[in-house]
Length: 348
Image 1 (tube, rainbow, N blue to C red):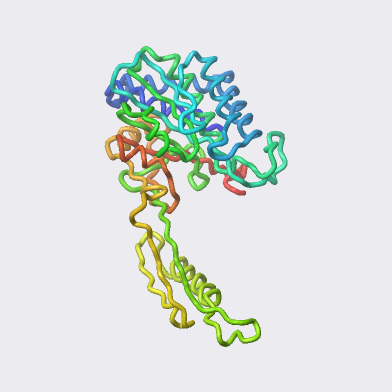
Image 2: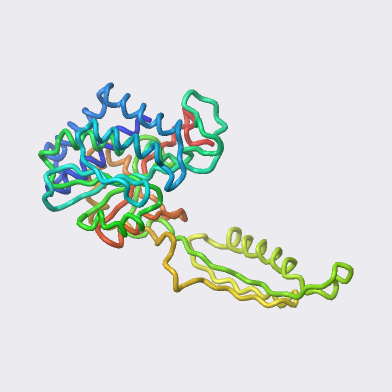
């Protein structure tokens, strides 16, 4: 949890300094501001509040587009901070606004949906809802975003205009809602157990994979159960095909390299067609970080956590709908390390 303070300060410093076009130099206004924000985040009262918020969300997980209690918690916290917001956006999301309304407009985004998993770990703040769990860290994302909101609201005189965006994989729906039409840049975060605690990581350009869909149809011919030899069983054809395709891609090739596999159902006297649905939009496009925003955030990160703790993240095959924002405006996503071997936080 200690990394939360570093990363929310990273977000706040990045957005303020981007808005003010500050440069990073030893003793510069940016460095002083970043350290001031970090000290504010380290205050016991502030940090404990952020942890309590995260744990409340963890105890009451909700699936995507069903985050009614989570949304209510967020709205209550924004009300207590005097931050205006729009709700509902894309069914259950909340968009808060800080600043006088001048341009440029910057945004921070945090996802808040849980997963349909049953939490098995016994601890004080275990999920109170069967088969729903914050197993992906989105509860901490919301905690950090609210922490950033608190810091930003206390320094709103420095801002032009600022949006706080929460929600489930609903970037596409948020953009359709037109509530973010005027943003000039947006940043997002995600915790990652393969990166050490205290470090952050990202990369310019492509960073996460897109998610595509396809349908495959194998046609055969039925027969009576007493005469199976007269059939052309599509199930028999499909089963080894699935296994063979999985083994070829996962065991014989680099998952980052494109590969085309041609399969013939004719071996089982069946016919096959594959539709890659190219006429339909991808569920999640490839996530591409804007290079200028990535570089600026990297400079801020180095000021806060040191050069050795700002890492280059390898391209990974996870999907992320945040790229819908990147198709509209300058966008970048960073991951925050939660790998703490002492606490075994990197283990299931």
